[in-house]
Amino acid sequence: MRLKDKTAIITGAGSGFGTGIAAKFVAEGARVMVADINGDAAADVARDLGGIAQVVDVANGDSVKAMVKAAHAAFGQIDIVVNNAGITHMPGPMEDISEEDFDRILAVNAKSVYLNAREIVPLMKAAKSGVILNVASTAGVSPRPNLNWYNASKGWMITATRAMAVELAPFGIRVNAINPVAGETPLLKSFMGEDTPEIRAKFISTIPLGRFSTPEDMGNAAAFLCSDEASMITGVAMEVDGGRCI
Image (cartoon, rainbow, N blue to C red; front, side, top):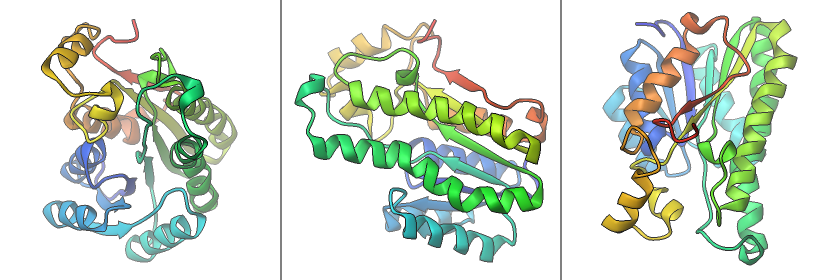
């Protein structure tokens, strides 16, 4: 029960890594808001876990404001925020990625962190405590060809994590990130371009531990970093990647 009596907002929690993080948080005693742009998916996960569901477009300021307001009304306090929602573009030469795709990548993967901080940080400053966890990627550390603008968005997130950590530390607020390698999530096919046994085998061959990451892996890492056990850890972008970035 490492997160007993804690409250958390987890974006993109209707599937994949976000669901794994939400499930682990609930198992550790937290009350969780399952936030996702897919309202049905959020409702299903929240029902299964005993949490509350919230439809949110993390790239829209009004939608994020409504999410935080709803969480504060339901919980009375917000102890943890996990910026997990993210998207990618299909693999391709950097110059061929459309401007629309570029804008969407930066809005969901980068602007969302700003929008959430704008609403959450004043509440955490008033409470003199809080934890923000950004779900970045190994792509921000060891970029893969043909995913250039996705790589760049996750590199931005890692730098934002460190900058936030330095600025918010005097207020008792910790900010960390986790860097997953690709896993069995809805984004897997987009990362690989095509999902075939041969391409999977080729990808897995680059991971020393020999497997994709799982939602449970992300939940375990996130629960530690957001717990009091990690009270001296801030500004870290922890690779949860089976050795991919070695």
